[in-house]
Length: 283
Ligand SMILES: Nc1ncnc2c1ncn2[C@@H]1O[C@H](COP(=O)(O)OP(=O)(O)OP(=O)(O)O)[C@@H](O)[C@H]1O
Image (cartoon, rainbow, N blue to C red; front, side):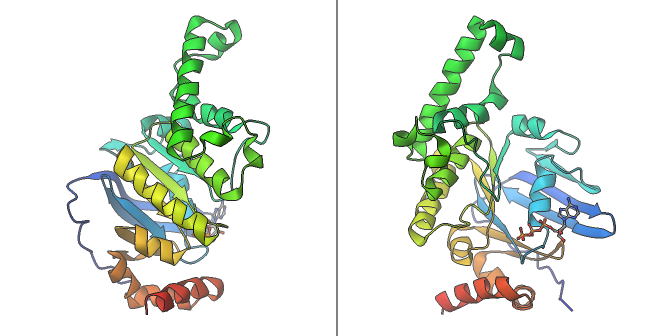
């Protein structure tokens, strides 16, 4: 039986207030409780991670925050504003952007066009403007193109601007997705397994990029990640889910040494291997 003791865990040093407050969040699918009364407060301008073995409920948790799934219970507040009940596009408009576990780029579009699509969430022109090619449409398009250029430059992909997105190297496609999410000018970005499939050099690049997103853009970052080395070296605060329940939270060294976390991982096949690697890497 997995122990479910949760220690409160200290706040991230220097943090004053939360950008995201999730309280008692629950999602039931028929008889299965995928996420069970999870509470998590994310300090402004922090980098935090949600980890847990396969099937722990991490993606379902992100799907509720971004309006894809309606929670069965609980509340989600961004800067004090309740988000439950909003559609995904309204959540984006409110200031939360995300990337997905599997790359979701438009394969017939260039890198720049993929980012412009992301930017659409912020555009003021309407469908009618687009059809009639009004001045407002041209201004919006110009603004979207400019935003795309800035974001491509920020993530280091300017050279791929006019290249079909799916022709980019794998690691760059992942960065392009992040650029597209950032083009919606979020306060908080949720990254679902951003390092999945990356080689060690691409993962190091990603780590540097995530730090710059927080340091230079002031955007709070919350990631789901299975790469324990990345999680432990990048996160300021970690929440651990298992079978939908929060089993631990705290600073990286606290979580790493929590017997409940070790038990959750070591009780599972593949994920236990990942956790073991990190343990060995840290002596
Ligand atoms: N739409 C759905 N309908 C029914 N069950 C679902 C649905 N989405 C997820 N689940 C179930 O909810 C549980 C949590 O799944 P979820 O994908 O959130 O886990 P996860 O922690 O993201 O896993 P992984 O690390 O493998 O991506 C699993 O048992 C899954 O089968």
